Image 1 (cartoon, rainbow, N blue to C red):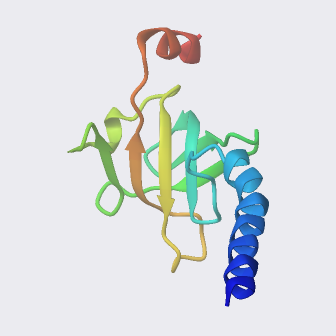
Image 2: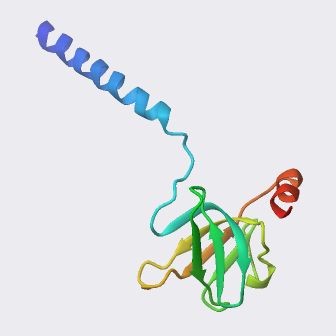
Length: 120
């Protein structure tokens, strides 16, 4: 019985030792996926689409529609027209649409220094 408990304890410690570096390596931030672009910089705004540069440097052209695309800033819904070049956004794409179509755009909070640097 004592041997089984010791073996179980050793197995738990071994699992924790293997899991700890992987947990430390993850930075806890949200990651980009096929249907979500996190902290993307807006480089073009148009009535029918926006262009964003993702964190990996790839530019994505994403279709928008004033009626179907929800844009939020500080938890409040705003007009798509208020989205500006240089804004950092998180874009949720419509998974059922064959095109890249934005269902929701969340404008991120930016400090004054970051905002000034992004627009220059």
